[in-house]
Length: 431
Image 1: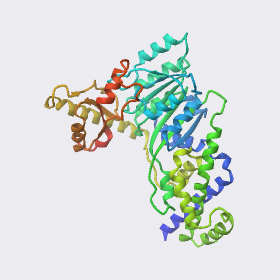
Image 2: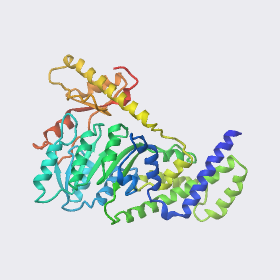
Image 3: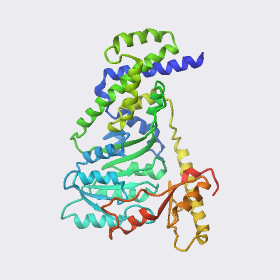
């Protein structure tokens, strides 16, 4: 009995929120709910307190997408990157994102990277900016962070912001460490695009869906606002048109489900079917079809505040990032575990063919999310790491326009021989 009462209470909370939101559709994309979520779940982990002045004062816009390209386009629009804009780009940036810049006919400047961090070299970046300052200034710097070594990116962001040059930081790793929080705190001109990992929207919809919906990655992006010009109105309008039928179907199906838990749900289900949704859905099956079709096309749209409000009101799955102390402990564990992986490769160096393995300088004071080496025997080491519970992978490659470039020797080397080990995947296993 108590289980039925609990389920009904959860459904009641959702129905109330959905009905209120449908009456106030102009407020679906304020970003306030997502801002609250980031502040409550992520930024709170910073010690001492998170001190990004622009974010703490609310001077930022934030969006969530299922599609990395959509989030990237939003941020390029926000930074007014168009034909002729000069953009410094990390050479390992995914090919699909580089293609977007190619289509915009931006002037792309690729700088080589360090083989010990896989980040841009700070001195090369500063030299480029200073040499070109009197000619044509740099409009945007795009960093690509995927291995957890964000310290150098943070330094470059701070330095270039003093030159009034915005940075766009692409974080293609959904694991957190202290260095990433420091980076989030540092960006005061430009924005961040973060692969946030699995969504929780599918869990909400699965309550009424006829089959389990696939979980997809979310991409959260935010831009520090320094202009008053709005450039996303048409995009958000299109998103609203696409997602409204899905939300209506979700509400209709929740109301249809409510009689399962409480007799008062019968009256509401009658009103829903015969009055509220009479001209929208002819049957439960039609609503289910709309819900399934709508969910599979979410990559086209921005995710509304409503989704994050639902997570706050009645979460089906709670993604617990813990407390600040937990993150400090986790970051120290990452340091220990990456050192173990480093030692493992060192101990096995002489057992492999000469020249088949290169181990970069190791940073003891940094918590790698992905430890990396360079090898001609990638499959051997993938299998070796798998034996100890670690997931290892190669990069997908580099864009054709920089492949074999004599000015990007390190980038091409990393793309061809780099092997990246997810440090956290084997944290409970002794190497």
